[in-house]
Figure 1 (tube, rainbow, N blue to C red):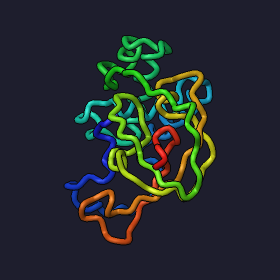
Figure 2: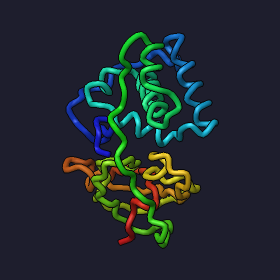
Figure 3: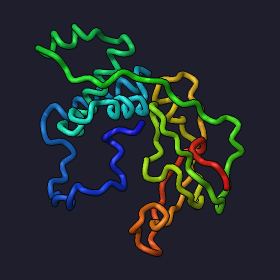
Figure 4: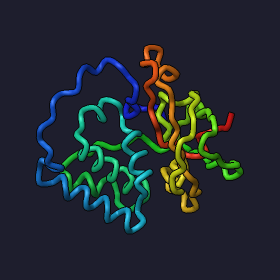
Length: 205
């Protein structure tokens, strides 16, 4: 879906501030939230694609005002409530008040199971999907043309896995090289960007 999380290629955010603290966690509760997320995935209560989709379904103001681990926790709580693992009133009773949740999940997108596949060197175009469901195709490459430079192992298709489909399709991803000048009007000549793109998002030219 096109949400606030899809910031690739956007301008107006200013320079990246210096970052010298390389610690993965900065408060005591952060590793606990991540451990619970890993255990929930191991038990089949959610998929990481569904977790990503829960985060991207957050209202923009809520998303921007949260830290990374706050988003992970809010997305996990949203999925736990949506799948019936817990009740919202129970969570809020334990939390001592309302908890931030994601917006409702809409329909997902089916994988293209009849896709003929691609080879290194193929010229491709990324589909312009404009879907309300989960997608791993960044907005700035949708509708753009590129060249396949590598084939990666198969993985669950996000449009199905992100919506908790039990039979989500496994398909390869392709490393696709895009010329910067084809992506942005002021893209530097000779510069390129390589993006890992799922098969169902690509059409051969």
